[in-house]
Each structure stands twice: as C-alpha cells, then as structure tokens.
Length: 356
Image 1 (cartoon, rainbow, N blue to C red):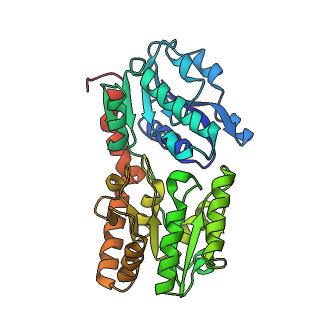
Image 2: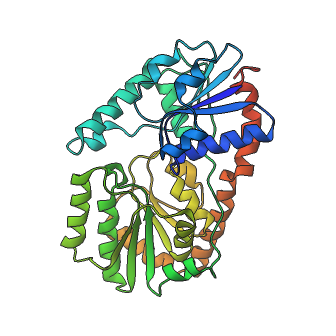
Image 3: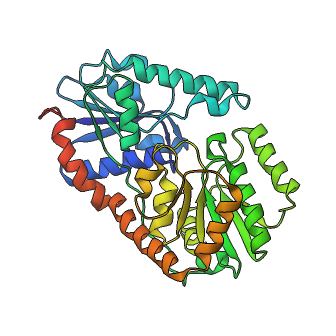
C-alpha cells in the first residue's frame, strides 16, 4: 500500500490537489493507497481523509509512505519511527528572508521547515521535487536519491461563449496575476509596472486574484501603493475564485504578469499557458523551468522596460499568437495524461523496486 501524508489538507490548494491526482493515478494502475492528514479543512473532508494516527498505526515494512513537505510540521519527528519505506515529495519552502519584518511566525516556520528538510536527509529513502529547481535544493540539503515528479495542473479552459467569460471580458487591455498576497510574490512590483503601462495605455486594467488576509501589514502596504498611484478602480481584486470563474478570467485577460522572486513550481503559469494567455515573468526560482520557451523571461526589474514590453506585445500580433500557441503546447506537459506517464516510469523507484 502507498500512504500519502499531507500535513494540512485543504479542498483547493495545490498540494492537496497533487495528492488527489496521485491517488487517481494509483487507482488507474490498481495500486492500493490511502491519503491521511494532520489537519483538514473543511472538516467534512474527514470522511475521505483519515487522521495520521489511524493510518500510521497500521503501516508495515511492506508499505511506502509519500510525505508531501512544504512547511515545518510536528509530523516530521514521527516519520523516522515508522517501519515503511519513506519518500518525500518536496513542494519547496519559501526562504524566511521574505517574511522578515512582516511576520515573525511565518519567518520562524520557514526557518524551521528548512532545518527539518536538512535534518531528515537520512530518514527518507527517496526525495522527489516537483521541479528540477526543488530537486537541486534537495541535493544541497544532503539527499542523494532524488528525482522529479511535476505537479498535475488542471488545463481545462473556459469556453469563450460562457456567461462567466462574458462577465469578465473587457475592451480594456487586462493584465492578470494569480496567487496569495505573499511578500515573495512582489505584488508591489506588478503595481509599479501597471502604473507605467497605464500611462502608456489608459485603456487598461490590472486584476489580482488571491487570498490577501494572511499578512496584514504586507497587504496594507500593497493597498497603500495602489492608492498612492491613484489606481483605485483600475486595479480589481478578487479573493479565491471558484475554478470555473478562474478559468474564465484567464481566458478574458490579455497578459499574465509575474514578478515573484521565489517559486518552487508556480501553478498559475501553467493555467495561464493553457488558456493561451501570454506571460511576462521575472526569472526566479523554478519559473524558467515551468515556463520553458512559452513566455517572456525578464532578467531585470526595470518597470518602465517591462511596461514597454507589454505595449510591444499587445501591438505585435505575430509574437502574441506565437507565445499563446507555445503556451498551450507547454501546458500539455503538466496535464494529467502527461504527468501520469512520468509517474508510471517513477513508480518502481518510489516502491524501491529499482535503484536511482
């Protein structure tokens, strides 16, 4: 049996979705599995996700544990005592420096998580990053048996004729960013770029999608910057959107912008590519790897130059369509079918039936 452990299991977050996709793959090849969690939300998920204590008690040396790791967790200390084979799936931990002066608790949790990562190199028989960037971090932390298992991303796109798509559409050029308001995402840099682009093209808008209540002082700073640039009404903010609405929004927007300075994978890039929304992204972390040749990578953060890039792209139909087509092709690599083939090749290594 393969036992997946997700320390904090939520209905819509990327790690929990990855666990669900792996469970579906195991079912498709008739491998017994169970997924357990330390905490679930909403609590109604407990009917399908049992507590770790219940599952750990029945693990044997014949089982394999897949531990999804992305932040410090008390479950880590219990793993070394389990009799089964242990495999980590590493989703990355944001460096603590991004939270200095913003959240002492988050900063400490990031530091502790990276300490746990380094201290468990001998506990795990195999460690898989969701990107080569993550695999490199694993090797730097002392893991010798490593590999890569990419995330599955829902690449189903909205039909342009749906009511949702029509609701989000606008004659204005629409720039989009999706992701929680975390300091490593550098939303302030996106707003600076938009401010300058809006001066070039007043018929434009910026849409930000994501949770913005976790770090109040950072959120406040972002909101104050929007007001300082007099962009109220030109920047639209959505909290977590249902999947159909988010898919429609990707289709309705013209350019996806990422100024993030640390990413272990970056799911929204794939969602944007699947929706044929060209991307401009700062070159950091796993972003070049995830993006491939399907977008414009920015090596420097010159806000005016980036704004001019957006203007150039919106006035160059050939480049725009080329990037849109490359994006759709690249997104297929992260479809269920694409990752499933990769997973089947990795499965003997996960189960310990072959050597790395």
